[in-house]
Length: 124
Image (tube, rainbow, N blue to C red):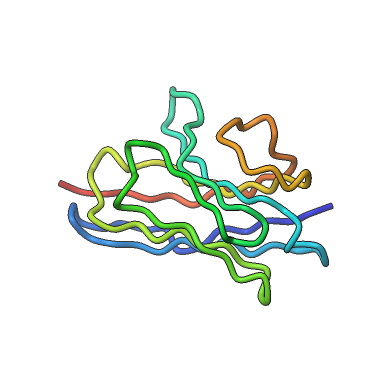
């Protein structure tokens, strides 16, 4: 069982920044690939980005590339999503997810555990 808890969401003006955190339980966090997804009511969950177990490889959706950065601290079992130059269309509930396989992917079904999500609202 892996528990994930996101924090850091909130209300920000367009052009602003937020940093989301996702704290994970478990003694083998460093073996998990981690992903960030987001969802708007009435729409499917959307891939935002992922990071490999070592943190050496990341990938992002085109919509956030160059604005968002994922990092992780395997010493404190936490993954981060730094969001800069935020736009109103970034408004969503953001979820982190863990893939025990260690395979970082955009495909949500490859992830085994999910957090409860944190709301991000970007005002225009």
